[in-house]
Image (cartoon, rainbow, N blue to C red; front, side):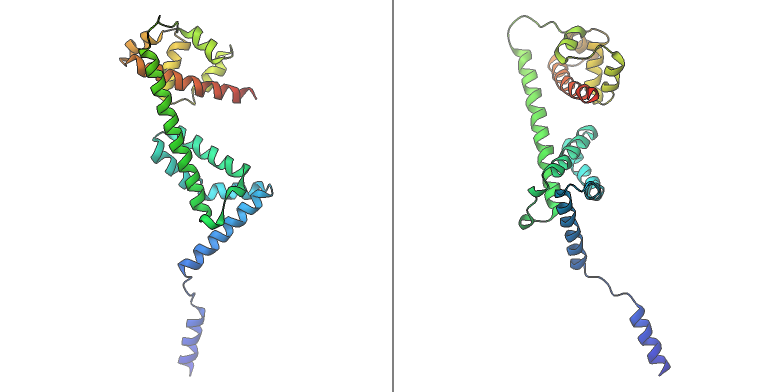
Amino acid sequence: MGHHLHLAHRVSSERLPVPVMATADLGEARDRDLIHRIGSGDREAFRRLFRRYSPTALALAQRVLHQPHLAEETVQEAFLAVWRNPMGYDAARGSVRAWLMSTVHHRAVDLVRREEAQRRRAEEAVALPGPPPDDPGEVVVEEIGLPQERAAVRDALEDLPDQQRRVIELMYFDGLSQTQIAARLELPLGTVKSRCLLGMRRLRAALMWMER
């Protein structure tokens, strides 16, 4: 009798395994609740959703973009879009996780396409006939609309990818032309022009953000 009571107690005290499907359903229910709360302006719900999925989203973006800076930017933009329009999630089309990863992937692919299009335009501009443009550092200042405070410019440069930052530094601080930069770095002129174009765009955006 004692043996049977001991066995019954041991069986009752053991934790039964939770089915995987039940765990997944519970997680999805929590995710959908977070989305609903975000729709009501709940910032803590947004932070919880970001903490839950941002590492996976960042890894996905890095696989597409191969640049940590661009991947972080893409993930931030994707989650900002979720904050602005959480009702864009349609439960009938899949899980919250799948929706988030799809959003990040689409934005990363779009960014790759935009970067490639800008490079092509810059390289095509090199081949156009006409007098060579004046492109020392002061022209870069004029085109980007940089503030005169060099400290602010240097701070903004720190966030640029290394290749773009090097070209902008040589133009802005050393006053070199793009042709001179190409010779110094032993790069095709078209590559220098494309890096300059991309760097200028990012630098302008960074400085605008710093001025807010």
